[in-house]
View 1 (cartoon, each protein chain N blue to C red):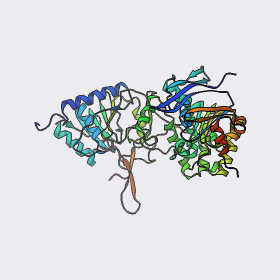
View 2: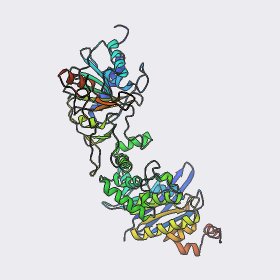
View 3: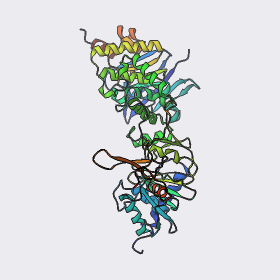
View 4: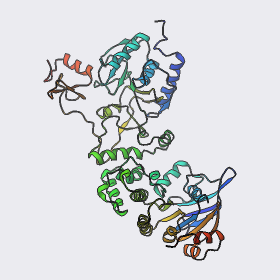
Length: 283
Length: 256
C-alpha cells in the first residue's frame, strides 16, 4: 500500500473535489465545474464517479459498486477492484452494509439510510444539451430559470408517441429551482431521488461537472398537467425471486423467443431468494 | 395616446465605423413603421438595437410595458429584457432557420413560447398550436412534422405563428419576405397585413423591398450610411420623395 496515495488521487486533488462537492451540496442541482483528472480508465467508464468516490472514501468505509443494478458486471467489478487495491477499503455487495455506493444507471431497491453516500456516474450532466447545443446559452437558461425548453422535449414525446416516452435520464426539478439530469437512471427510480436520507453525489468526468442532492431534498419529475409523470417498469414479477415492486431486466434465454424478467438489482434479488422467495423461473 | 415605443438618439458604432447614428422616432400602438435603405445602411443594426439584441452606445429605447409603464429597455436587467422578448415582443428573422428550432415539430415550435411563460397543459398547448397553424394557412395535419420538411414560405409562416402565439404587442421583422419567390411573397404579405390589422399589432419592418412597405407600413424611414435621411407617411415618401437618395431608391424599382 505504498505505491499509491490513499484512494489513488493526491490530497490536493481530493481537496479540490471536496470543495466542489460542498458547493454542490449547498446549491442542490447546480452543476459545479471542477478540474477533472485523467483516470486510468476511459471516459464513459465512470471517471467522474470514481473521482467523487475517491474524494469521499475514508479507510473505515465499506464500498459497493453497481452497474445497471448488478454487482457482477465488468464495470462494477473493475471499479471495486480498483478501490480495493488503491484504498484498501472493505467492499460489499449488500446495500445495507455499504457506506459508499458508486452506481451507474440505477438506484438500489433497498431503502437507503442516513449516513450512506450514493455516487452516480454521469455521462452528460446538462439536461438541456440536446435541445440547446451552446454551453453559454444553457448556463444563461439555468441562471435565469428559463426552463420552457425542457417541456418542449416532453411535448415532442407526446406528439410523437402519445405519451411521455422518455424512459431514462428523465429531467427533474430540484427544490423548485434547478432542472437536473438525474443521470441515465430509469424513470422508475426518479421517485427515490426525492426525500432520500442518503447523500447523493453526481460526477461527470469528461464534462468536468459535479452536482449533488443533500439528504431530504425535494426532487420533482417534470410533466404536463394532463400527462402526469408515471414511473414505469416491465409488467411482470421477477422470474427468480417473484418480486413485483422492483425494476426488471428482460433476459433472452434461448433462440426460440424464450425470455425471462429478473430484478436488475442483483443484491435485492439475492436477498429475497435467501429469504425463501421464489419466482416461476427459479431453478 | 402615449407611444408604444419611443426611440431617442440611438447610436451604435462598430469602432470608428458607424452602424446607425442619432435615430429618433415614436411608434404608436397599432402603427406599422417601415425602415428601408440599401445593404449596409444600418437598418438591421438599428432593428437589433431596438429589439435589445445589440446594446446601443448612446440613446434611449423606451417601451411602454404593461405592468410598469414606459421603461428604457437599455437599463432593464437581462431577465426582464428576455421576459419582454418572449411575451410582448416578437422577432421575425429573415431566414426562418434562425428563428425556428429545426429539430422540433411545428407544434413544438409554436408551443415553445407558451411553455416558456408557464403553460403546462399539453392539450391546451396543442390546441393553440393547431389554431395558429390554421391562422397562418398551414395544414393542421402537419403539426407533428419538422420544419425542415416545409417549404421556404411555410417555414416563414410557421415562424410568424411561433412569434405571435403569446399575443405580443410589438413585432420586429427583418426582411420577412427576403428569399421567397414573388407569389409566395404576395401571400405572406397578405397574411401579415391581415394579422397586423386583426390583432392591432405594432410592427417595425426592415426591408429593402419598397413593395413590402407600400403594402404594410403606415410610416416610413429611409436610411443611408447609418443616418435617417427622410421620414414620413409611406405614400408621401414614396410618391413625392424629397431626398436625393430616396428619389434614386424609388426610381430604381423595376416596372413590369
